[in-house]
Image (cartoon, rainbow, N blue to C red; front, top):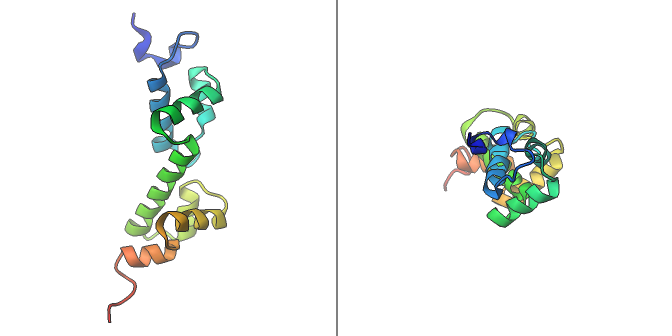
Length: 128
C-alpha cells in the first residue's frame, strides 16, 4: 500500500520537504488565527527547526513572515468588505497586541487600519 496519501502514518519514514511546506502553508490558510509551525512539526513527527528550514528554503520567507502576510491581507480584506470594528478584526486575525498590529499594518500599507478602510471603501477624502 502506498503511504504517500497518508502523511500521518509516515512517522519513521521520510516525509518530503514539499509535503511539510504544503502542510505549513495549509496551517496558515486554514488556522491563521492560532497557526503554529509546532503543530505541523508534531503532526509529521519532525523537529520544529527542520520544518522551519524547509519552509524558508522552499518559499524564501520564514513561517512567521508568511503567517504575518496572510493575517495582514485578511485584515485588509475585512476592513474593505465588512462592518466589523477594527478591534474585532485584530482579534479575528490572531493578534492580541493592538499596538503591534497597528505598527505592522502601517508598515505594510502605509496607512492606519482606519485610514485604509476610509480610502479603500470610498468613504473618505472627498475630492475638491
